[in-house]
Length: 175
Image 1: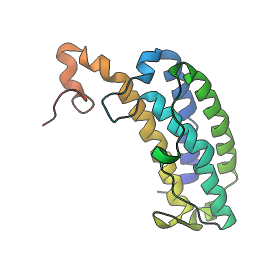
Image 2: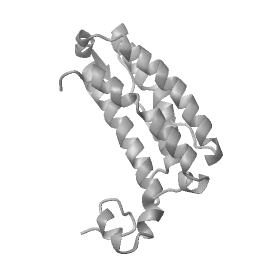
Image 3: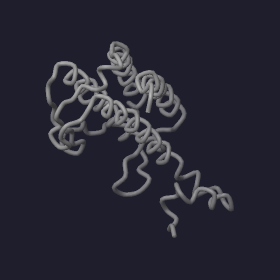
Image 4: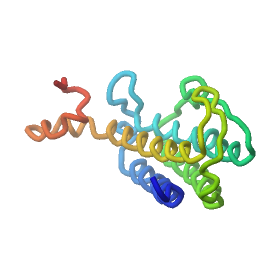
């Protein structure tokens, strides 16, 4: 993909507004509701994005720039435990501050930096360009995952329209 730097910065810059809107619009029960056992709630997705924004992605960019390798990240072992849903708006604001700093960091990158390599403890040799693509994918994936968790009670109550949501309906058997 060409022009990953501006595309990545543009997409990563949308995340805080999406989360701010979700945290302000969804009541606390919806925000903390797990769509099904073993899946993350919107609040857990937000906490994970905050963890990775503060401790993973910008740290890795700096490692690439310094020519250093970096460890993997296990959210189950290294992630922050989720607190009360009532702190969601404050979490979004903390995420927004961290994301602004990350966007500033990315603004200082040049196209040539994308070819820099480092060794990821679990994945082996990776490029900064690959990691940047992963960051955008990760960001969008967990935001969509949160929206999917929030939509579940609405799907269930949509009557005959429920069939339109088969791909997202965690309670209806697929197949």
